[in-house]
Length: 337
DNA sequence: CTTGGTCA
DNA sequence: TGACCAAGG
Image 1 (tube, rainbow, N blue to C red):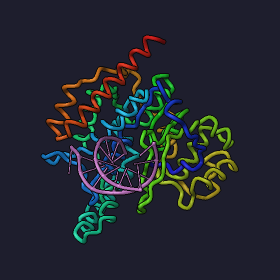
Image 2: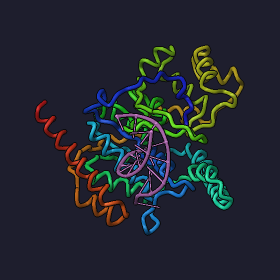
Image 3: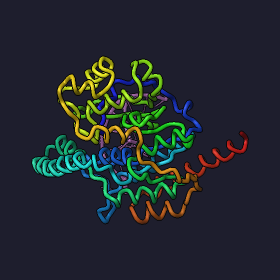
Image 4: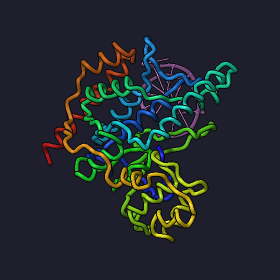
């Protein structure tokens, strides 16, 4: 979300075979946002049931995670709790951007500009408590465990990783690296086609992993210095220094050693620096969670998706049977090893 | 985003 | 098969 530090890291393409059997801590907010913003009609309208409830995220979750479970990945969703106070400015700014985009979406629709309509519709994506609630209900019935973080979901996901309760963090964002995620996997989807924004061009996208330790070694920095770089560039919790991007930040941190010295050199300040640092170095996490994969609630899924939310019977029956078969395969495998 | 039909 | 595309809810 916040940190623009992605370009500093080396990404390694990875196959699903290599990820087979692994537990993935999924950043729930991140993936739901992606589904909501991308699963839309040409004029930007999201998928909805007959009562006008948005269902784009449910579509995304049922199909993508059926696929992932079928290839042997075991997801654990982590949801955001209460944001740190320092995030208030970011949240307010996002709300303004959303409201503005909503107006422009309407205007674009009126003048029949589909491309603009889609652009502004995506920018107006809003995650409501109902959307999160529906997602959790669906996950439960799919047999996918989820937990609530007390604060930042990414931080909780990294705690799971460090605690041995998952094998990697799955997110498009790089923030988990600031929290110390040893292994981050991006593009965790089985169908690898993605549209290039604004163009009618599609490229093949495959999963890629980022190993934190190797990257720190290659960059010649410590974890603390990576956090310093993130803060210089800007995070959800601070604004960052104007004119300083990832490359400049890396250079300055390597040259000066610490963010304090860099700020002295540039003669600028970052408000509540120690508090921002602490969000990454000692984040608020829950340690008393329980992760339990459950069985597929066939009837519940059919009722929730088809009866309540107007999903196609054929498609959902197929997805349910694939889910059940995948789980059976998993069980058998567990018994053998 | 994913599915599933069509067509070379 | 694989590329392409409309539709999904």
